Length: 196
Image: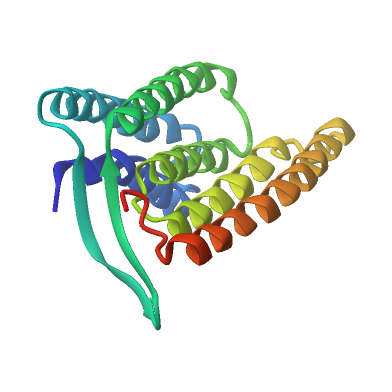
């Protein structure tokens, strides 16, 4: 297993810990999420230097699905574009987490908020690093769900509820377009493997 699996794994682990033990960590979730996302940013810098020096990196984890002509491997493909977007995603996410740690002081759903932001960060990094279009689509859906839940964090406010509904509808239209693109790609190239 590559050290670059830590890029999505760190925020994903922080999210699951907060989901499972959030009640006991109420008001302290940022202490878990900020280091996890900051370490993901540092690992993204390492990946950037590695790709700059040695070219694209391919990490195979395991075979996710193998049905007929369709073969889906869970793995990562890290090239020049990937590392640039990883730096952007993890860097901005680190800044957001630090800012939110002050903004969310005293919030009754503090742990829930930070669990969702960590999961959102993990989904973004997985989407960017995925070596397969089907998995890219799955992580896109996870990002959409996190986006909806974060926007509706203050669901008791009518403006937040309306904004979350708008995001859900816009994402649903994009979901259909992306799904059609995935199917057309498979029909055209007989693979969903991004490097191929």
